Amino acid sequence: MTRYIFITGGVVSSLGKGLASAALGAVLQARGFKVRLRKLDPYLNVDPGTMNPYQHGEVYVTDDGAETDLDLGHYERFTGVAARQSDNITSGRIYQRIIAKERRGDYLGATVQVIPHVTDAIKEFVCADVDDQDFVLCEIGGTVGDIEGLPFFEAIRQLGNELGRDRSLFVHLTLLPFIPSAGELKTKPTQHSVKELRGIGIQPDILLCRCDREIPVIERRKIALFCNVRDDAVIPALDVESIYEVPLRYHLAGFDSQILQAFGMSGVPEPDLGTWEEITGRLSAPDGEVKIAVVGKYTGLKDAYKSLDEALVHGGIANKVSVDIEWIESETFEQDGNLHYLEGVNGILVPGGFGERGIEGKIAAARIARERRIPYFGICLGMQMAVIETARNMADLSGAGSTEFGECEDSVVGLMTEWEKEGKIEHRDAESDVGGTMRLGAYECVLSPTSKVSEIYNQDRISERHRHRYEVNLAYENLLAKSGVIFPGKSPDGFLPEILEVPDHPWFIGVQFHPELKSKPFDPHPLFASFIEAAVTQSRLV
Ligand code: GLN
Image 1 (cartoon, helix red, strand yellow):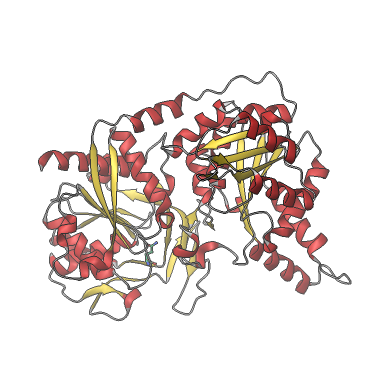
Image 2 (image 1 turned 60 degrees about the vertical axis):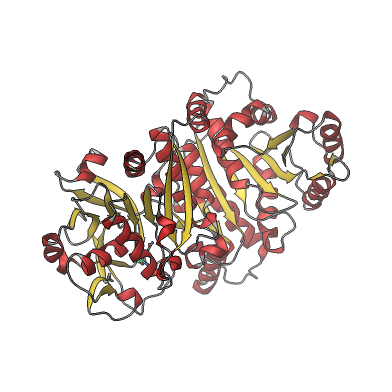
């Protein structure tokens, strides 16, 4: 029997609902349960793929090629369960389906309405593609009271009735602000938020209260009384040093026990949280530190590089060091005299990105890394930048560039117009739609056996996730090889160069895919573990 846990938020956004859902998933998993996590996003975009990272943070790509909300990254990092397209829905996608059905005549004769058509479509999504999971955790984006969220709240209210008390549960995440002048934690915003929720027919079973200090018993009782929950169902969610402490803290606070109790489940063994203890132990007592410069375009918002940020931390966990990340806006290196920002860094990483702004700065950063023998990791656009840099400065192609940024003399990176996906050829051209048309999701890559990457992966065939429209032009392969740049990873048909290496360098690797999406704290991605290891070696040289 699958049970559903609905997680809503109130008072303010950014309380970490995604993280809370992911950590709860991890604790339930540690109790031996099979979990699946889903996100319901009320905005009207069909998916977040067309949004600027400053609007929405990172776009998380799944194996099956969906461009999804970054919370799915948290879910996967905490549970190891690969997220799917069916785990993220938006109002846009729901309406797109309903309108297509209406045009086809599927509702002939009926007035198509939010209730029941939109709410039914939401309920269908929540319950679809579930097999033997014990728990499905469903997070509703936004906060209670948002106009666009109403159909989602109505749908989960209905589901609560349909599934019944023993199969559905509502968790509400709120904030308890500390007011210094009063010297008190304030419960009123939480009371209002729950009132709003009850106003639309949902009585929360458990309240998860974000706060920066312990909640005194008296406040806890007050919340319970005014919000109509039991005292024990008011769970403090205190600020923590590392997000990977959250599963441990939740368990200590009794969150998982309250969930089981609310479902009337008894005799469940205590969770085995050894992995999380090991991870937090390593994070709190590192043997050293390395400094990594991330040279990107959206460095003002860390959420824009969420998975990357975490994957670097995982690389640190693998090497028992802490990773100090310097986020540097790439345009910095387009002005003379700014190279000193890279002095003392033990590794340089150029992440994925789109558009022309800042690219010359990224190319300059790749050049410094290569010339000064600093470990360099180029991801997607970062690999393309490395190809342009090495073509210009090692292979004497001074006019090397990418057609993404306009015409150039030597387009060492060009628009991909066709490629193979599951035995079929995908076609694109410059006029294709922008939404959902990139080369997306998991693709296999064959590694040449003598390369550094095959040693790092310890495999000759890998699968990694992609999200790009441009690709390295194979026509330049021989010329680059003569100059000391090789492509030791290619698509199985040999047409797409997926990995770049400069063998005569301590660590200079570019990958056309996004390895950060598959890294987990309990299973750091081999490329990140190796990159940080190279940074540790570099730090001992200086
Ligand atoms: N803009 C580049 C492309 O579309 C790189 C994309 C990325 O870094 N994800 O190919």
